[in-house]
Length: 156
Length: 156
DNA sequence: ATTTGTTTGACTATTTTTGACTAATAATAA
DNA sequence: TTATTATTAGTCAAAAATAGTCAAACAAAT
Image 1 (tube, each protein chain N blue to C red):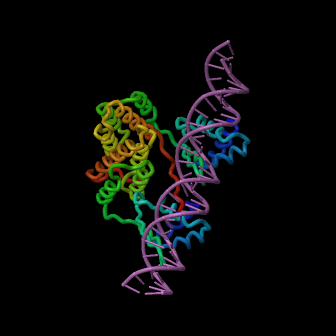
Image 2 (image 1 turned 90 degrees about the vertical axis):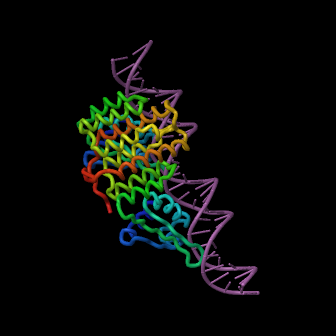
Image 3 (image 1 turned 90 degrees about the horizontal axis):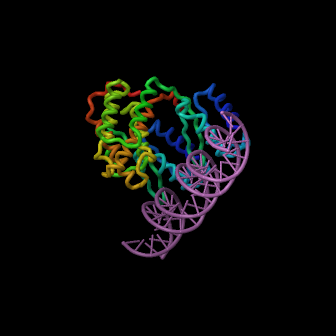
């Protein structure tokens, strides 16, 4: 169900840079409880994946999903480094890497290298420590890409 | 039983490069316990045999088996993985990466990514822990370079 | 007899679904 | 204007729906 709603919203977002919905309407359309929509948004339209969400309650309320657009590569990397901050979960970290790949800032091989390095099983086992170390690693890797000479190996 | 399930999955994989199953369904189909499926996968669809396995739990969960191509440099990478073992210093780790670059197994960008990830300053500060985590990271990254996924068409 | 491989099931981990309760805003009444 | 009510959306935790782990029991091979 989550996947279906996600696909529906992404399809709309392919043609428009933002989409505005009424939560109860979408819930009715897909025959699910309204809070399911929140779940979809919280797990699939995060800032790490490149989306911003605004909403308003009360009469005429809405939920608006906006595709964030960044100007260039260096801008994108800086933005991502900020988003990462001092801690990041495995899931969010993988979303960040996936986003960089989708936007052709890194190659598939680079993406895979980075994604395996985000895996929880490699760290200490203490969640707080791990999230901090993971953020350190990811920020360093992204910062490194920023100062790189023009990409010779074309992103596939 | 293991052989039968293995044969079934391999037959499907002969026609498709990947197969996605629901664990409980396959268990029911062959009238065995669900964890039998894990046994089959763990013993017959390992990365050494050229298979990659992904899965998701929860509603709409699945197990996906993907046939991958093992690359020529696989043997060398395996040797290096063994040498790394459970602990490695920053200096030795960087030498390993440098060797991969010299041998043209990784690109310059990949090398730089990996080298920054080996840096002591990113870890916990406890030398023993750090050497272990670093070894985990490096081994995982090398393991990932051993194979290549087939090009899969993206459904839109 | 010993070792190696397989089957089973209890327990754990993860992700999604659901619904009761809460919060915010708009519309309306006083 | 202010208070009240209606109309949204948000939060959170429990329940449900998956898959994973591990070790004991069992079977097969040496």
